[in-house]
Image (cartoon, rainbow, N blue to C red; front, side, top):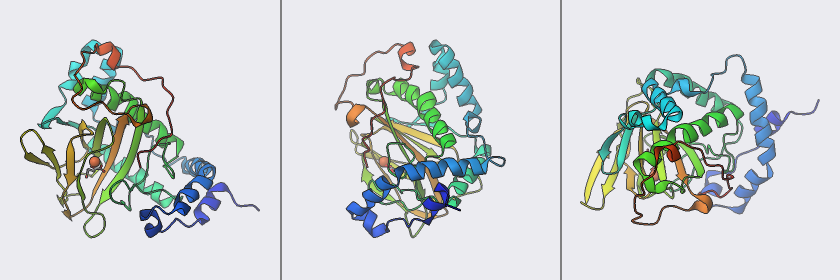
Length: 303
Ligand SMILES: O=C(O)CCC(=O)C(=O)O
Ligand SMILES: [Fe+2]
């Protein structure tokens, strides 16, 4: 009997961490050569999961957010109800309850099953290589191509993130056609921190996936305010998200105990464009904000 695509994908050996870090050409070739195989394997894996599979949909999200967003899509003049759920926790950094903490166990279990699938997944290595993270966007090599996850990923970006980003940062309008995303996982002694940097995004939504029972210490995210020279250290609570322009300098302090898991989602324009420095904040009608761009998704990946 011939092997299935899932079996074939599982039989492959992931490029070494050293090869990935040195960006050895063989690594890109590995992902490129096996792209269709991995895509088929994820479909096959998903089919094999039916029955005990979690329905990945907006029922995982905070109910108040879900209701306010649904109302704003119906009637954009009511978007203020969404804005009321956002708190500015540092200059230009807004916090919101994104996931329902009580549903995070389901989502995390899904992500565990993704690891158990043993299909090669490419970890993110933007600034540092995060060993227990995965690329989420279809533009990325070795991304999490399970179709139901992809539908959910698009919903997070299209239904939730983009209109919220446009409300807070109107200058991103038009620089928000393209998407990018990855997951990260910190734990002491392996991947524990990230140095100060800006993101190559117009806007970043960083969502925490820690269960209420998963306490951690350290791992504050520092946001640097260039205007005042002040540093604001913020701590994620389960299911909360922080949304900020990509050009805000930020860093993650070392995690001292426990673990932290987040989804990091980006929006930017075609060919990686971001709003020019000091871009004026245009006045945008609410009806323009609550729309989904029709531009084709390009295939440029920031890393
Ligand atoms: O630690 C965090 O949550 C922030 C991660 C981050 O800034 C990044 O991956 O670009
Ligand atoms: Fe970042």
